[in-house]
Length: 242
Image (cartoon, rainbow, N blue to C red; front, side, top):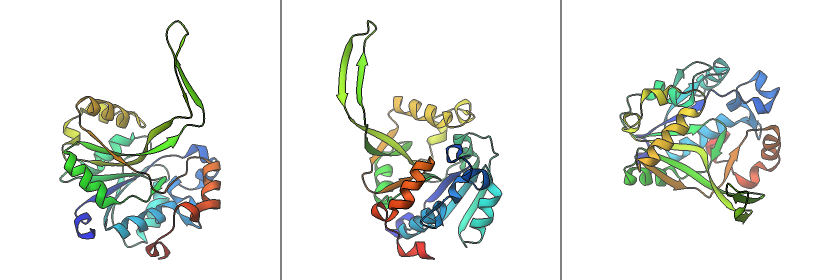
């Protein structure tokens, strides 16, 4: 398994501002926020290495120098890509990886998921798709209702199960050849959204369903919950102790 994964690189997107974390991310970049006493980026890398992934590209942005200083001490096979503070997510990926010579894994810097990357990569390659999205089910806490133009209800679902993108994807070498520069240059996450919508129409999006343990920190409430219940839904492997 590990030998197979050694050929693939991972891009970790670390440029977001993390505004919903308030004063915490006024001092440090979001991937440096601690879970269980260690930065989430450290937990992430430890798990990826345990799976057999060895090559990393860190797309830096907001407070990137702090993150680069921390990671430079970890003796990683890593490359730092400085795309600028205001560069959109898709443009960051493009700057750091184009042209793609092999399939490449994408990971958002604020999400840690216990993915079997061997299964993920085999699913992606077998699909022959431009992109594979890792999705997970989530139960909506509300009853959802649709109505027509006359204001008459046409559908009602009580707390339906929805599927959401969890911040992990795999890109094929043909990915950027399927979209245009205008989409690549869009701000924030618009480029990712537009490219996925375009590739869905072309039947080029593969789905990898994930139902194991994951951690996401988008707000103070989520961070508190993660630090309180961390061991209940993500057990650290031995590599994370290093």
